[in-house]
Length: 424
Image 1 (cartoon, one colour):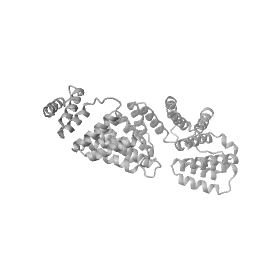
Image 2 (cartoon, one colour):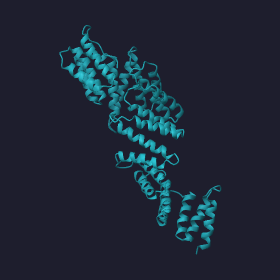
Image 3 (spheres, one colour):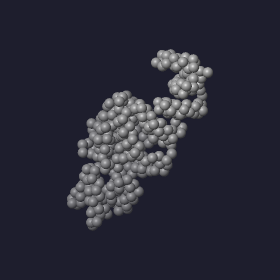
Image 4 (tube, one colour):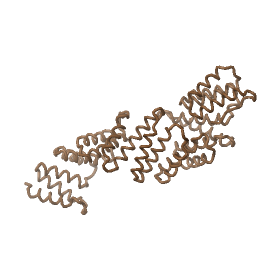
């Protein structure tokens, strides 16, 4: 943080106390900063001095996510000493507060007027205060503002601009690299994303709160998954879990995201099904159950169904697949999910139920089903029940749609011939 010193020269004692507060900010020790501020405000200081202390209290309240209280402190500081409003630091802080108001608003209540105010203050700093020591931070924040409007080109320009300035605060460059990685990941360029995310890790200031470190590891894990490097993706997600700080405000969110990522990565790796299930169950057990449609929960249950099917845990698979459909009634792959339910019933020798599910698939399909596997399971179910005439019809459909190079072509033909011989 840049020291805000505008008091008359000669008050060296107060000057040092203000610097103590600033050093507490730099050390992320808000409790100490708040204590020092409280003591100073109880002493007999002049109006301009009180304005500077109030400006620092505004910062603590902003960092505590009390935006309205922070704005009230800045307004009070202006009343005590009007020139304080023209400080670059004051304008940058106001930009941060209004941006935070927008980001912290509940869903549906975010006000774009807050981002407009933030833009206004950031632009004033960049246009009118060329020697402000934290211009890099202002570029970073403005870049993040651009991201909220999906203006990726301007965001990238600001993040690169932030890297051209001194690393003040000492996590500035890390944050710029991380956001650049995020942008390229969002644009499906995992190699370029990894370039910047590795730089973010390399520049992460030692001793700083690990909350943001978790995010970097998670983004790296996503990038590695996109290039199908599952071993390193798993390692990155594991590092995220190791870096979790229970005292961090985003701990639970990061905890859930890390377990979800590890579960989905392990699901793509051979012989890791049981581990994958453990992580996905951790995600579900520690998440708040959605009241309605939730695509993430649907995806998790579908993955659990696939994993359970691979482990021949058929009852669990059926339960998971049904849950996947209940959390996403408009599932784009509903027929495939129901096919897996039918497969599970078949493997449990619940042939009538398998047949019932496939009949349901035909009822809800918009057009004729042409997946030979569906008819193969249907034929096998009828065959097991010795309903050979119905098996013949199913196997003929399977034979119509099966690719000629499929491994099951000969099996389908053999079962079809046998069923034809025994049909009435």
